[in-house]
Image 1 (cartoon, rainbow, N blue to C red):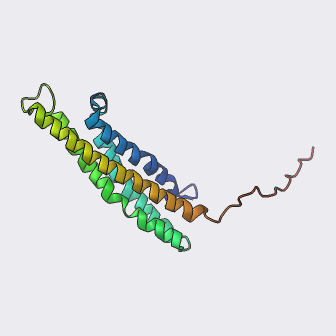
Image 2: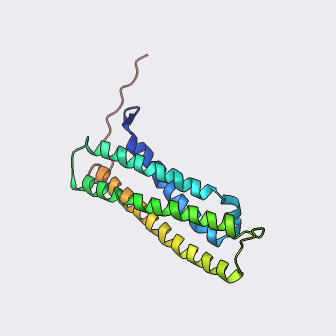
Image 3: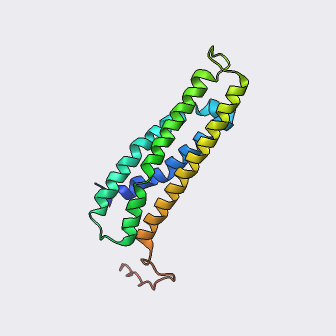
Length: 173
């Protein structure tokens, strides 16, 4: 799986590195910041759905790429860590849908099913704690996977000092 001669994994992984943590942060903002809740609405579950679709695609592209590069301990470590992200993304998606459902269906001033203030406060605290756990776990996992991938590609593959350059040929008139 290539695009313009580059493995698609190295291109798509940038979307995961940005979109998954962004979704996790937005998911934490929803229960704690009513203005964010009003503005984001269904956007957070839709972002989480995009993550849920994108992560397996990137994993598949990574497996395709792994079969085409020399196997090293760093590549194996990156691949093993890469397999740990999907459960976090599934949890983020389920959490995002559940919290959206709570705020959209029950915790609205015009909802006939709106529970009392104490129940609403308890639910917001639970949603916040669960959201923080999922967000921190997801973001830490993305960072560890990305760092392992960077090490697999870049460790010992560049010089700490600039290399001498050869002068480019001067065009003749």
